[in-house]
Length: 434
View (cartoon, rainbow, N blue to C red):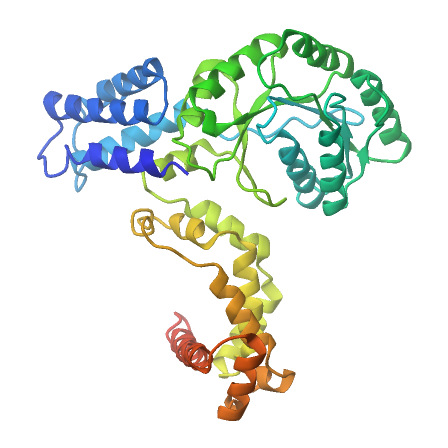
């Protein structure tokens, strides 16, 4: 996400590195390069020019603070301006009404149905609601079937009437069904469009007028660049939606949609969606996104992801075991599982400040985790709890059982031993320990 834009902006900022002070000349040159990088990232020229003109005006004449280089000062101004461009502060979805209704709109192929099931998962597991999804796309039977399948996957019910061709009637019946069966939030899917179509736009406008949703979200494929911005404007002119969802942010997107949409439609981006998994939905934070674009990492999001899978009681128990040199393969397997729940390892590493460029050409093979799990799972319960039991005969059996060579099993056990010693040393050097 934003890799190309990040690289281009970093190259642009080299103009200021080594300069003794901010001047009209070096700021103008840097601003020009940044503008070029934004346009290449599919930000409209008008937005890019107004943005860089504003940054340039703020930078020229700025007094240099002690120990702050011109490039650092310019990055600070860029960061503040990018944050403002993308909305300034994070905005929650509005959940009000009895029950609250969230209406979802978007073009066909934008990832709308996938987003709906992610939103249902988010509301159920993180907000503790009892959601009901409503299949109101009556023109594409596959959309109804897809939503039903996704609902079963996350154990969230879907209200569907396959023979009913009236989306408003389906939605109104769903509201009554939700009230009767104590579902306290409703998410309504609507007909997808291959392009902006007047008849279907009128249909969703009617749905909004009759249902009076607390929140109307427009789902847009971020990979379509400026087309996404133009489509968002057309929808907003018709239905006046409340917020935007950017999907496919894990694809080869240049980031222009995220930087332009707020400016053009004056509506906040509320979620960003990556991948197909139900838990791959993130709240949009303009300040954190600005940090990522400028290669400054996103340590806050990284900590939040860790806290979601972090078990405090287990962590205390693990600390005691490490102190007593009792860390075993069961503990390792448990820790590995928690790390994998946090998401893609390469993406997680990029959230650490300064690691963005370092990870650019690094290929982390997630399949290696599966191989390690297979090795541990091929051990007996006694062997997992007592790593010292592993002699050559046992290792041969484990290698055969896990589908690995004896060399790979030996290499893993050696790495485990080294890690165990290092963890023990870190415990001994923890501040406050005696």
